[in-house]
Image (cartoon, rainbow, N blue to C red; front, side, top):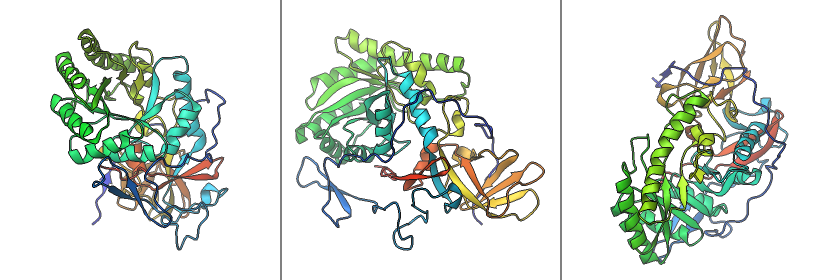
Length: 444
């Protein structure tokens, strides 16, 4: 019997909630091309990308997803069976289908642009959420970005550099020689920075970077609320900073922290919680500077406190990611709209008040048992989610019939994006473009 996720506590945007008005008239052309890859380009017919490393006997290869044209013979190339023609009506798409509503995405990007227009602090978009250099460049073009990105993994950083983005912060510890060799390869093509929380890690980075003849930036990670990696005292931070400035192959750049969303749903609560946690990071910054070591970067915050960080002196950048596509967990932040959704089709109405759809856990996430929400169909809720089916229930009746389409709002967009190879970009109810997701499955 297939596993089932039963109904759990749901939170998010109530169906029918009107979107906030756009904050500017900036537009973006999603058909704009990305510059050619600066390294690792394969010859025609080769299906691998050879990522250069500093040592000639260490060549890493990563499979490249087959490139797909916008309009293809579905029996040969269209692996997820979605019509690719521009202008295809939303209702004609085969399902399940991952769609991004371009107007909502652009509106979210304009919120960020407007927030950071006159501030020292800028957005360093976290691409673990979007997994696409194309979407990261869209934010850079609209404004509010510092021109760089965060990536959760070295493999994501490789995708971003191949896509032409060369200012990269990996806000995680990288500790093995194998991965550090890959970081050093990237450092030949851009400004690559890692986060550290121990002197031992700084020494390991120094050894590998020196062997490869490159310099890698390091930031001290501060544990402000996540209870995972990071230093827990200013004294620890000073010890690490002193090691970084004394060792070859590393450049001390600053401090960083990531805040936990928690249960602060009002703007006042967000400001209070955000400031409290960011102040912990700034205490480490002040201690390092008091030790005579300059701090260039203070990278702090996330979508939860993107606007809080912009008001705090000393913060130079925010590591936001969720704001781009959004999810129901951020329903209290009404300035943003949910842009990433999954389109499904009703395949059965087995009993009164119940409809079965073709979207399951293979297509959309339900982290911690929090189910997706039905978009803009009042009275219809998700009762349970199975591998390839979803059970919808109505409030006394079921307005959906077999063959009807419905849209689902995700509880978590990171897991959703990582299930798909492409975004189907929708504007005014029709397909405007197809955007690849090259960062899908970049776990290493």
